[in-house]
Image (tube, rainbow, N blue to C red):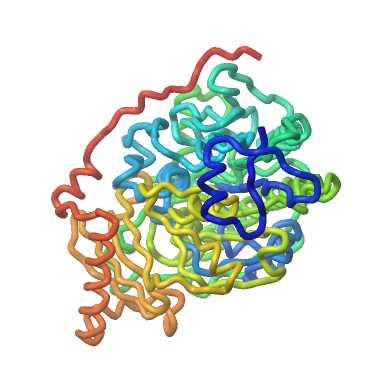
Length: 530
Ligand code: CA
């Protein structure tokens, strides 16, 4: 059985008729659309040369740029909760964290895999489905004909000696290749061996460039003969922003010895060695040499961090190039939609930070590149306001599959194909995890095309307002001085979105969500079968 799916216009009748099981494809008809969804972990848009930032000019990503050249670069795609597991849950379900239940990485339980997710709909409609690489949701993947996902280090996986679980059963440790290389090879192997009679929907997901930024040795010599420029607000003093001032994610003060690739002294027990390497997390002072202090120490930490991060990105770019080459060599590029994104953005020194979580632009905004032959014009740029809950409806829409009513996101296909903007004038955000890991106060807020309103509500009651057009670096909180009518208008929009998305709990209930500890059922399988 083959699905009656077409790349081009599909009538409602045909959608209904092919919902479960479809007719043979006739000769001369358009081939079904395959979906290749590529996602890296913590890969900021500032590190992608298609986005044109100063850093990426020195560390280009030619293969990621191929996707943008073949299709569209989207400039206003936002995460709904900027950490790994919660973003992934929202992407799969098309729902905000408070409805899909996975709203924290730590003490937030595991993903409820019995929920409706977009891979399940592809699978039910005749697609061969797979997820390869990072999963990070605890429970076994559901909705996939094949899964091989990282499970060690709390589901994060490691760069070296990564442990994977295949189809929820066999556990393997890859001892010779870097994590990115393993995932790259597995992706090509699966594409080669899949049932070529069926269309495919593949999630190709990297661990890189997540902390602690350990690149493949083939990239160790990259960027050794120059330094990267510092972001303009590298020395932010967080004036007028009490929540930001409380943070523990500063390059100057919170990178530990492990991040900086220091080696623990010989002779320490494993526990003491781990403690030695983690030193610095809580702001403890350390320096590799007594002569390296102050500004020079901060500069050295930044260069060490950014170079290792971008070396990891180089590996991801290579791995993406390989699958794009494969699609071209096999002709699959003619009927495959390709998405590239990251589970959220990341700070590459902006505000003096690494990590994510905040609703400030660098971690809130997700890179998003998408190509679809004959449908999206090459080298397009879109400023459509999009959230990660929109990904599932959009992929289903492109494939001509039905979008369940329970998904809160909306397809943005028409913005790309028909150049039709939606009526959305703001996106909504809500972050919960505190104080681990970086002491980022829980907050919610909205962003319009010009303004951003944020409420930090956990152990403070602070509102922030930014005019992003005049203050793109979000250094000046204008909440106290802004026009009352502007604030009233934004508060009205915020309230309306909270009602629309069902996020109407009281502040007390929201604080309780942060405080509630939900033990993980999932544990790393200890038995290694290969
Ligand atoms: Ca992440």
